[in-house]
Image (cartoon, rainbow, N blue to C red; front, top):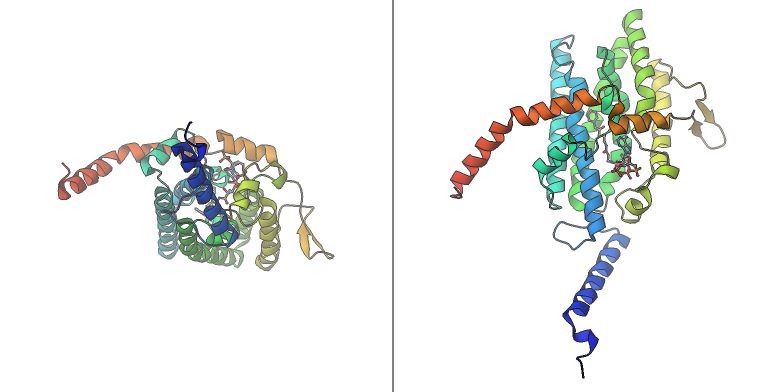
Length: 324
Ligand code: FAQ
């Protein structure tokens, strides 16, 4: 007689996997955190690496548009503020790459994937910063949108990502306030300065709304990411929240948001807004945005030109630990 099927190692493994999956599902259902040492389904790990890596890449590429103004900032005070902000974004990238490493990803490999176009970064950083008002508008709108999107991620189900987001959000709030303060200062200035602010708002408004991703009807990752507690709100919900939050700020600032359809719906208390150009988002994500090639070329040069630093640090660490 052959041994009963249940005694086979394969069945034991299957039963173990089922128990682990049940434990994982119960942890998610109870709103507890998954930690790096915990078992997790492969799809959950892959989804997190994808999202966290894209987020980290966005922070690092996101240093470029504002970084372009570091040498031309109009005063020492504005230069010091901008330098601190750009450095903060580098820090955010580092926390996020560390969070991805807890899932088994390799930082250098993630950077290679970004440079080779195998991983994405936020569409917003492919637009040019034409005047210093763009620096203020990035703080106000881009950091504002980032906060809207990232505050719910502080409750994301993966512990290291959620904890990284808490610190990132605190710093992003500062960034948003400094942008708004810069714009308020310019709006109190000359007609020319006010016109610069309005022009920057006209160029950044729609791309900022696109940061939240495709509409819910065309968002392939949303359902599973929500079921896993990675995403807490849909792309459209967060976009709506951002519009509702920003309209009164625009009124206070004295700028016009470039959308003739923008109107408060008295019944819901929410703002209706015009259609987004989803073809533009697709073009920018696929590398055809106004600054995609330049952003990636600069990131590639930074990796290649600074390779000797990594090599020296790695050799030094190996020497200290005796692994020569
Ligand atoms: N740009 O199915 P979904 C910042 C991709 S940080 C490019 O809806 P998901 C701070 C998406 O990856 C800004 N790609 O995807 C700062 C997916 O492609 P895949 C970054 C986009 O993941 C301020 C495909 O389209 N923030 O600004 C975009 O469920 C100032 C289908 O989309 C984060 O990364 C886009 N806008 O939802 C720094 C936050 N939208 O991977 C410097 C974390 C979508 O299947 C200066 N990420 N895609 O090939 C998230 O919350 C989510 O990943 C979403 C997308 C909401 C971005």
